[in-house]
Image (cartoon, rainbow, N blue to C red; front, side, top):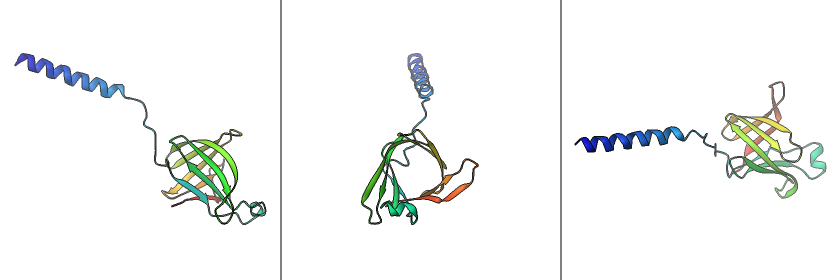
Length: 130
């Protein structure tokens, strides 16, 4: 009986030690495989054939941004980006120039650009594509 209790104590200690050793933060994968696009640019950008801006989230930390025409055909590319999701805040860093844009989710299907002064810019709104 003493042997069984000793083995049980060792197993419990090993299990607790393994649980404490796994302290790496888990990646937030809520956006993986999703795409968000603007509701359309009706001003200057449409002159160049750019109507929708699309953000596609490929992994838990990277994605690609591009432009489409009003029919949804890709018409230009901004290239890749990295991002950090701290829901409801989303930080997107463009690979090309290193600028980081701050967005805030209004709900699970839309987010908006947050200006440096903390105000929300409703002209840069993105909606989830189905």
